[in-house]
Length: 180
Length: 171
Image (cartoon, rainbow over all chains, first blue to last red; front, top):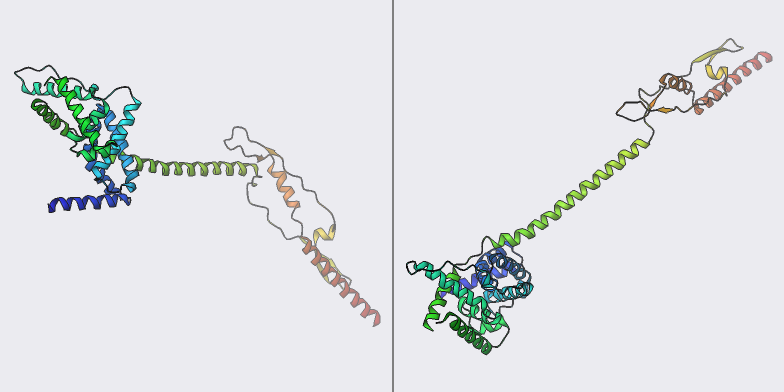
């Protein structure tokens, strides 16, 4: 517990230094968040280059808006919200919907469990990409990013009940499409 | 539902293995530093260009001004003196030019320029240095103050001569 508190105070100190324009602190903050932003952007955009662009845009906006961070949520949640907005803007600019760009893995064989696993993941990505935008966002934020219903509601700018309903619809759609 | 959870968990592991390819801080903050550095480079290039332009203008103006005459400048010569005998058998030194023609004016012609063909330096040069040297010799006249001083000395001399004559007559 003490370790968690120490980490939080260290993060607060880092954020405070970054807010004051300390470039070293800003760099540390970006490095701490880069993989998380990239993972989220990749599930929303489905392309490595586009996700990379989105992450860089997110980083620029986070540094610009750092002075407006009011600590009502964690820094991680607040910055994922910015990443979500960047991904939405990128999706509007292009016709694709996301994960459909990811190449399908080779056909599985019962003798090769790794290939079977890859096929399963490929199907999962494909189904996730076919989900409506809001359902995909809710599912990724809840299940893959580990945000609470309340945090997901803040990020998606909707009520907590709407989040629960959207996640339920997403899981049902996936079950139907995966046939499980 | 359990199969879906299993597949979701597998996908979660796959999801967690995704990493940003590279260093985000270097990608983002490096760009802004580079643009700041670019600003300094632009400023330095601008200053260098301005200095070069100023240099070219200065060289252009320098070529339009009259060139200096090659060789040593003409020396100011002391006018030659002529001894003039006075009535009391004394001699007075008077500049020769004044003694001969005290109020003669001398005209000085401006030299004409000709460019030397085949020369890298297109500055004009004198076509006849000898003529110029003669004209410069004629320029070595006494100054106005020197002439006045000489005239004053002559008057003094004349007064002293007249004074001597008066003394002789009175005797």
